Image (cartoon, rainbow, N blue to C red; front, top):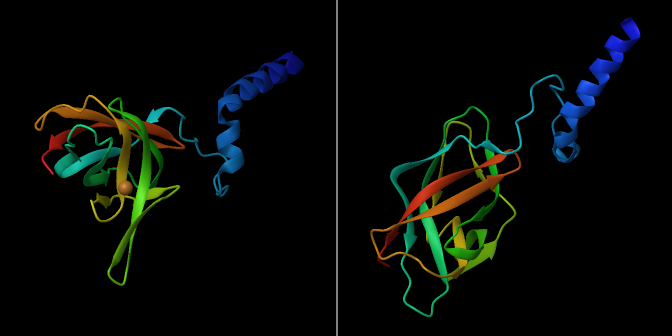
Length: 164
Ligand SMILES: [Cu+2]
């Protein structure tokens, strides 16, 4: 009786752990092993703040544009973004902007962090989400879904197309 109960328990644990394996292996903190890990695929606790997210309209022939605006983290844990996607773009990436002397240089980054309970400002000349291979962007005033991704899950927000 006791044996079969233990067996059932361990099977349940294995089944429970399986989808978490990759995350557990790469997670840097193990201070609370008993705490419930975030569920992969869960909705990230991010909302658009201020005037919301915007995406810059591009003339025909231009296939790259920028998503900017303010993201607010409504949780008490930092959200580390690791990627982005949009149905209006073939590819999306996180970028930072370096200002050195008079030069301004954009470069890809592996992550952008929205601090716990705080905001991350996405700017044309700062941290931003770059859409590449853009096609079928609506006219200014239209909206485009932008998915933000982290290890713990993702969230889909809406960006309003604005004139450059
Ligand atoms: Cu960029």
